[in-house]
Figure (cartoon, one colour):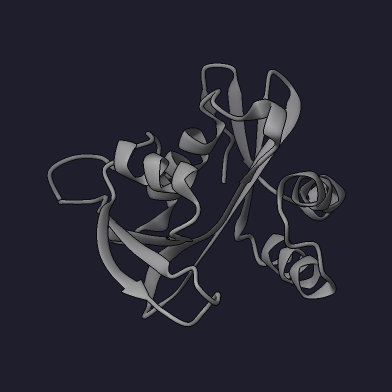
Length: 161
């Protein structure tokens, strides 16, 4: 998988050498910092399911995706350093996942309390597909879907490496 660029933002597959950067981004940007999350991140990197974003050369964020959602591509985790937010990093990561996913749809989800992710999904053309209760007490999960391949055009985000 080759690197992808969006202006000053470069997206590359995370490697074992990048795991400490992925963990550092998670530690400063996410409220989930437990051993299970760290093990999950290590598996995603080892399995080639983690993308790393650099903004002007600085590590800025990461995305984890897989095919765990009923066999469909699923953007499972999107984390951007606070100082790199609102600079296009999240959008670049999502577009790269769209280009790589190979399916006709990409799914993701977020809590109802995560309005920033909801705005991102709306801005990138995702549609709400449902709600899952009882995952996080009092904070339902919103499921989103985006059609990314229709057979007539290339997927959003460019190349298909």
